[in-house]
Length: 265
Image (cartoon, rainbow, N blue to C red):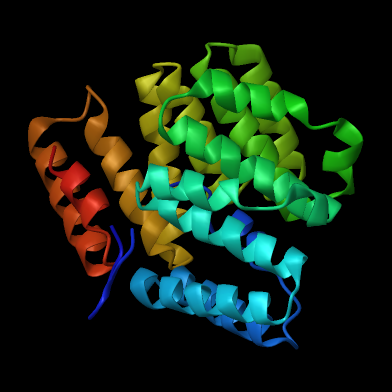
């Protein structure tokens, strides 16, 4: 749970690529300025501060009577709730998004976050259903980073239902819309290998993703990778202990106690 002192208690996946799109409102508006500030806070691991900025952005969007901006902000908030393991709250936020008010890009972002929420709860069948529900023309109309994030979630979902060929096809699509040498691609490939129980390949890819995440100063992704590496059966006991401690410390300092608690399990 994200903790924002003194009054608010607020609480996975998708990462900065999709989050940036979900909060990509017009920066000239009050809601847009607050959303941009929130994105910067999340990128630096300041989740409590960022979520508070999103709450204010949501109020501003409603004052502006801008349903598109409101939808984008709600999607961003649901993304953060998913990342911080507050799945019920994430679902409640998505339930009030008005799809008819969204543009094509934001509709794809919505589907991406819906898939991330389902997969985080290991409801891979539900995530696959969402992946298949979008027409290809709609996905192609989205911007490159949104397409990459969408295809990445589709890849993970199909791995979850043991459709390895489909998972790899979507991974290739994610790579075509992003940097195949980047941390996002390495992490997505690692998750697929992990879910399909190829632990040697998964560990190798996680290490690549971890290095790139540290270099890019993405603390949430780094801590998440430490968690997944600690769960691998082949990781030596002493190394597991170290990974769990680093993971726990990182999430605690980001104000994410649910994630920190999971690191120690």
